[in-house]
Image (cartoon, rainbow, N blue to C red; front, side, top):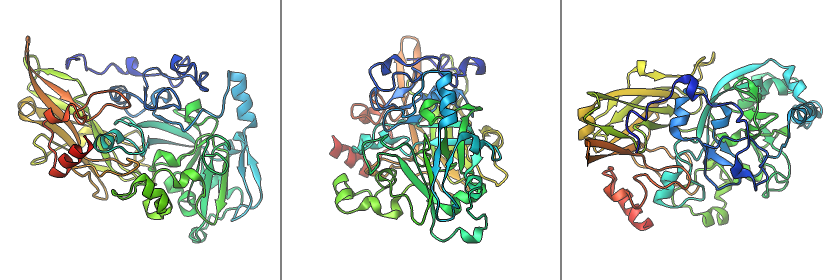
Length: 480
């Protein structure tokens, strides 16, 4: 395993991954996406195809508050539906792509919007954290299998997105800008290409947000054609997509094909059959038979609060003979709805006491908050602890708090989709005696995808030393 010295992050210049990886990944050679340029370091969560990936956590964190497109997590339900071979194809798509805007419910007349039409509107650019609702799901799958695949703790990315406000698009086509008109039950619906996916009436992926939310520019709902100052990459929705800061990634339609205003929420298959947190006792069979998917109380829009530890990393080894008197614990934290992370705490004794991360050791992305006071990004944090305290600890855990005083629970709450998993992030410490002397070895809860390792796996949890309640121990025993 790597030593603490080998875990040192590379310099900024060395660490920066490209926005577009120069060549396709050979792993895609036999898939419909064989033409797509992809970074080979990305961890594949669903085999070769479709492309559902996250970066290794150290690689993500090394890029600070600017995640390049090539290492930004991807959630694809099928093949990339907008294909191109080179620059001439790209320019042709940019000229010919149209987003349908049907008339009705405030839209004055039917329109087919081009990229040039969107570019006529005021340009806006926002640093926004995108997070899959399944981030950290593998921890839930170690307790009881959900219907979702194994996201680790890097199912998120922090990029700068450029485009125009959706409110400006709608206003330009007749939708009233008077807030008094926005509360009549209307929704703005979005969908991607038809026949993209096997399920649903037309095979599209679609969802919606209330009209008031879309029209309020402080929410920064955007139609975007840039990521980090460059055109969108294939996996991220080229040529145009929706960005809704503070919401889960599943509401941000890629390869945007239609915007419509409706008197009800979207009736798209994926609006109902995805991105829900159902009660803990509901099984997949019950969800279908008893109509749980259609109960509005269980839909996920805003992100929940979450945090994770990146240092010590999984497999990191700290040589006690050569280390200093202190050690820097590092990680990230985020919340939804534009709420600020107001504090992060670290415990070395299972929650009996907490070390508070000082304000000066919490960093937010540039241009944060927005003029409306919204925090659309994550924060990175560092806390220095005495190495002697680390030596005595069984584990290291973190939790965050946001401006609404939301915080993370000690234990996870299982749900059938395994979404919004956010218990304390716990890294287990092992004391080892080696030829070179005593050392500490660290173990994260899980590793993303099919990778083995982590203290929550059946083979590791009994030696982990992690603090687990009687309820958790019972669940683990039943699972095994």
